[in-house]
View (spheres, rainbow, N blue to C red):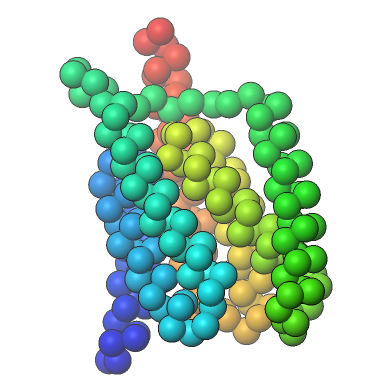
Length: 198
């Protein structure tokens, strides 16, 4: 097995371990997230996919932030950082910003790169990227609805990858979709327990 292929499997395994540990609210999720994303930075940079390399570099940085945020919230009684649920207004503002950013980013990418992607695919890729940036921040803040965002992002990613002939690369996102309901329910229980304790 070639080194490149081994790295791909390590990156996928790390990403799945990351999500499984996020579901359990384990701080060690950030270690696996950083390791997986760092491998993706290398792989995508080698393939000339500078946008994806940049996105994964952001994930590495967010892993550091997430670890710091979750670690900083651990109190003497070993209670974890609480799961929170932000207002509808916050999410509406974020979705509006993502929509505006998508239009601007897709226009810039089409004009600057001369990409042969269809306009719809450029828009979808831009929207997925911006939504993933926001949602990664939500995970770091332990915001409950991150799971709903990830569901939409993963479905859109699968569709985009299949349209681009990258069916195999879409497989991990199908695994994520199967794990998302467990993550949402686990975090919902934590949120409800915290509410009962107050």
